[in-house]
Length: 342
Image 1 (spheres, rainbow, N blue to C red):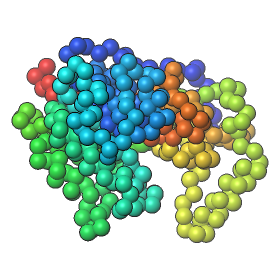
Image 2 (tube, one colour):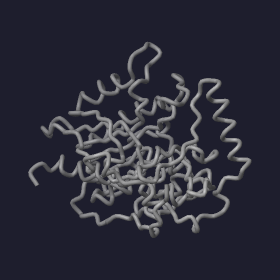
Image 3 (cartoon, one colour):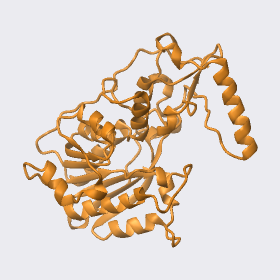
Image 4 (cartoon, rainbow, N blue to C red):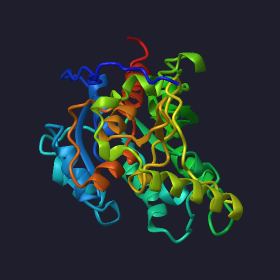
């Protein structure tokens, strides 16, 4: 299969924000994928918050508003409001995806993991700010997560959210929203009940599997890729050995060759370890890992989006982010939902 040799593209979107825009707080903002997409859609992000200093540093390189490096379990909504709200702006929308590692299907799930409590912190912030609407994003694994008493976590969360909000829960593919990646996520959307608006499920922008954007359109030309990204014979032999061991022990090993005519596999935060989750193979049998620029494009970040830190830090930030284009269409959806007569 020949990889399309296209020019390096600029995936940046329009970023004009009208003065009447909805004001948004981005909890668990990471390096800013959700904020970038919402800003491009015309929403006004007034603050972000994340516990990881590297991600906050990246975030603040790309926006005029500020993200704060704080632990939500140690910072009350009242204190957070004092930090950012110099102009006493109302919060119209709350967005965020509480860290998903402890809810992942593939990962080890620990009922004592403090990250589980972050869902309750999200609800606490929701109760304090009482925004018109919220979006909560997470991995599919959260749907099967149970408490020590065998209660479904999602039922508990929805029970709390439904008290004050008309809510929907849906599973969406980022590839249906012009992202060249088959990233599937759970999205919970709520609109405050006093607004008398029942949210509908966001409709896919791309209506068929065949029309999804192939990953080959965002890959670099072979001659533009640093030789360090190509796998040596030793590394290739190591992949084969790991596959054999994984098969023998009943585990699935993650080495996968990308089909350049289809969207990419989900790019996980662990991609920094060896890059085997998504590999590029050429007609001459050479195989390589994806570059950081390509990883950014697969998550629909603009080429000029600044992400700080070591290579490991950068890849983790990219893997943890909400795809910008996906967030863009969620933003457009929010505007339509909250302004039904316009």
